[in-house]
Image (cartoon, rainbow, N blue to C red):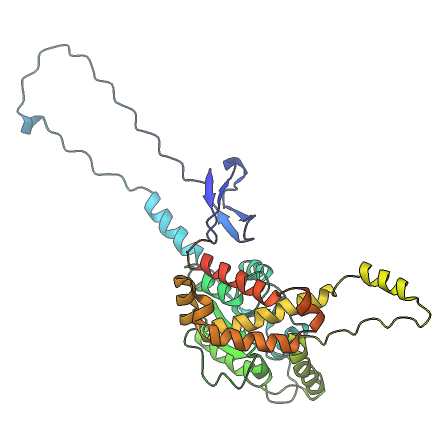
Length: 369
């Protein structure tokens, strides 16, 4: 049979015999989206045509009214009730003790985990978007905390997908914004892509626990009680405070690591040997390039979070660069100020990530490529 990816629309040919009774999850080879494929419903067999008994003697002619026999009332079929049961069963039963956090910064993951563990929750950690989607479907936490700049799938794309699916719409979601220029944003986002709340990265330590408590109360559940430690539940243990302070300081560095200094040549190396070594050496360190790409995604995700209407209108009209010219100019200036000269000269990764962002948004909005 032929199936279509529910994210990018690519059509795939699938062998019916390989689909399990409960459905099989497939990964789209084009966009990496994981979706469920179910077996097509079997067509009901046509009822047998009753044989007509032979006429052995003449029968009296009947009027059309007399000859008409009303059909028997239809027998209650199990199809309709089964469909209703199936629909109810598809609604996720969320685990009130579990929270998933997805971020590609180790310091952010560590800080969030320490805060939520202190509150009595079981924390599931993921570092990129596809892994986060898989874990959410498997673990079914009542709350997901998603970085908007996740690799592979942006956090707000995951949020949009979960909130618009009947089976997962009850899950609570908090988006983490990096806020690349904290002085610029003095307002809340107009739209959160369906998320229940958001938190700026530099406010995780002082605001996350309160936001989680509020959403847990709205969800009608409470986490398992944490072990008593002799102090107020909202306060970290004294021995945890230095660790959390260090995690908070590291979060800013995670956005864009300091560029590594080039190797210092040995005094006895000859110029020709140095020239040959330079030719054979990689132009830039791969980790620096990946860090630059990630920083570009952070900038673009913040632009998208705080300017959702303008972003979608610009993509729909095909003039994204013009519609967001001021934001992109500011983002580019920040990018150039934080990324090393060697990385900038090796490629325009900011432009490449912008093009990827526009393409993915077009797919999400159903506009194709």
